[in-house]
Length: 145
Image (tube, rainbow, N blue to C red; front, side, top):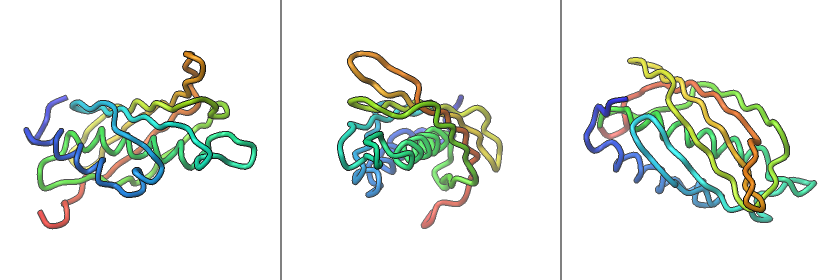
């Protein structure tokens, strides 16, 4: 996939790193390229639900922002992306030391982008798929652009 803005990767990296909610959860950007993004999250007690698994909201947030970041790499300087809808399938409880999410743009249109993500839990050197995620994102004018 081609970049529409030569500065897109750095611009989108700064956007990701500037989101207070992501910093609060501990989600970090691990990799970035045209049409894809990877994020990681160290698991801790602040992410747990009643039984001690990673809360589905944390898993969904990680996938949502990773898809948005992947889509954002393909925007012009005057554009941003906003999630229109998403579907998350939680395949097994998220248990482990960390989570890794890989998101990729499947189709980038002139007004809508479709992206998919997979979230993996890492425990004891083993990685297990815990969730799949699909997202439709709208291209909109970036505020102040």
